[in-house]
Image 1 (cartoon, rainbow, N blue to C red):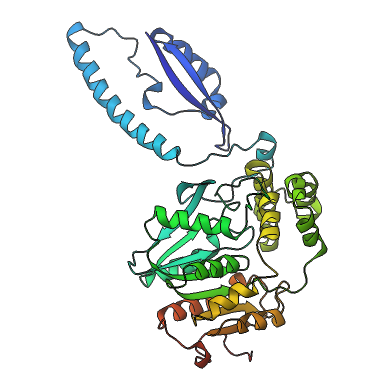
Image 2: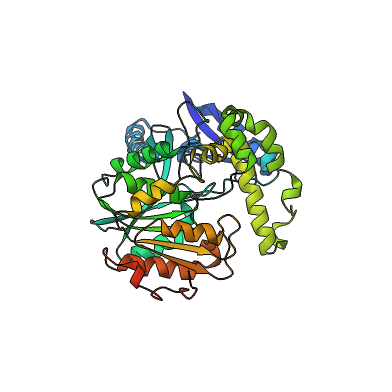
Length: 421
């Protein structure tokens, strides 16, 4: 009798090479065992998906006719249990997208730098999200920055759920493990409506669209957060903006060029990727065990860029699409409109920010009627990393305070609140 099997073929690092379908006659057990004994290295790299792929040692023994039926029944019961388990596993696996890493990248030790949490399929593809906590009244929604992921707010999420908040982190389209559609100037992909639609789809899927919201945005995510607040102004109770863009002053020439010729984005991978993966931009180490912290960060970025560019692809579409379609230099009116409703807005930033100058940050704060600006010393645009403990404390104190707090009268209420603004 012919039986069919699937065999996973993996290399010594455990990376998947291929899946083969194999057929085996009942009387070929000895040949397979001889082949395995002749090559122990191959035996290490061939792993089975099913427990019954290698028959028992007594597979070639003769059975009594009386015992044969009873043994078959036992095997059927075991197989039915195994089949149910395998169906559940394959059902879970089908929810995720498996990105195949080419062999030449595996030789460079390129691996996926991100982790799937929970997923659902929206209009433009898979959305990777992480919903934690059980608060039934107010939902905290976070919006990461350009080329960021839901992991940006992982520490904040862990702290808030200890204090009974429910927190939703998710990868925006074109980022992390969410889908990365090609840029379309006609459909305004990677614009405000594009990301608001994604957020609404996710909240609808989770039955959370009728909640009250606390919002946290970082950098580019601040534009999406305030635009969401503008649309759901009666449900948004507090906003935290970290290193916000949206009121930047000088628009670079290349950004102006994208506005004039947006179709450059569709061919951007041909001339941008060689620069992104240039060896000059990364310190490459042969032995990862010998890396210091600076080398590790550089290696991580190299791995991340290579994976996004050559495995997931369309990275330049998402980056340039966001720069072209999100109003990083002209969101003043959105900020003003949200500010008129006296929603408490806490703005956190660093005094060494090379993207948002202190002048820009102070002007941004003035656009909100009920806002408070905290500038941390010796912190860059990545103030979330530079001053993580202080930021986490500020977020918790702010969210535990009243929704009607007048921030103008709350001087020195937060950690690091010691610089005159």
